[in-house]
Image 1 (tube, rainbow, N blue to C red):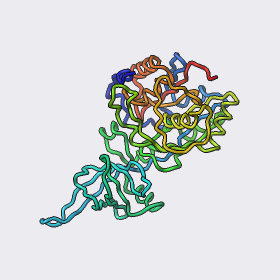
Image 2: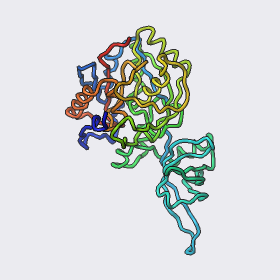
Image 3: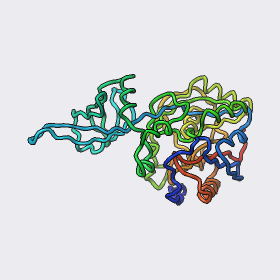
Amino acid sequence: MKLSDFDFDLPEELIATRPAVPRSSARLLVADGAALHDGRVTDLTDWLRPGDRLVLNDTRVIPARLTGTRSRQSAQGEVSARIEVTLLEPRADGTWAALIKPLRKLKQGERVVFSADLSATLEAVAEGQGHLRFNCSGADFDAALNAAGAMPLPPYIAAKRPADARDKTDYQTVWARHAGAVAAPTASLHFDAPLLAALEAKGVTFSHVTLHVGAGTFLPVKVDDITQHRMHAEWGKVSQGAAAEIAATRAAGGRVIPVGTTALRLIETAARDGDIAAWEGDTDIFITPGFRFNVTDALMTNFHLPRSTLMMLVSALMGRQAIRDIYAHAIDGKYRFFSYGDASLLIPKYEKS
């Protein structure tokens, strides 16, 4: 398979820069096998059945974008430089891997001040990333970061507008719990308290798993032969309780429906041996057409970038031609695309064994 197999032309005006208000009023394109149905996210109560289980990623997005100042002495006196930092992930040695712009203006051992409570020192540079050690940790770090940082909007939104105070709510799920993501599990952004209550009343159940979405989710695929693509790794956990709930739903004949590709990738990682089990670690699972899904019966997800690994994933679930038809329908119907855009419910035409 070639990268061009997952390409399509998207009109610029269909890229959403703000979410629907309220969240659950976003449009929903349901692909029930080959049949396509236009609706709203609130219509999930019509499409989901008693006994179905939604799998939700409870990662919390951190305000990972920081702007600070580096100062140093020169022959002309003290000189300063503006430094922009995007945190990527914590490292085992206590530092944070980060993208730093401009990296050339920061030397090892120099300090960047972001606020009165938050600063960091550059300890090393590796593979184009800086390793920063902050002046505080734990709850103090969380508080200082929340005060000084901005939400790490995806590049296709950040290119159109800066992050603002609204994004600290908009770019976070209502059930976010475990801090560590630098990108949101965006299909989950469509859920609000009334919709969750309506689904629960219908008999739909929920399981929470954690996958800390990394900035690598936005990295482009640079090889034409997709089998040569190296997937970025992300940390995730499926608890014993969540694994048991998912297994029980399958045994009872209910459908397991991850909300978002992150939840799907995680539960399929935990079910690589066929049956789902508790799992924790770094996953670099790469799902392309031909993949065997062991626990996923359907998927709720947003509309993805062309030539992306996520297009490959949904093509694996539904079939390449089916996804072409779904996306052509979405573009023709002017659905809103990407992180703040509309949603789809993808129900494969095959029945689980």
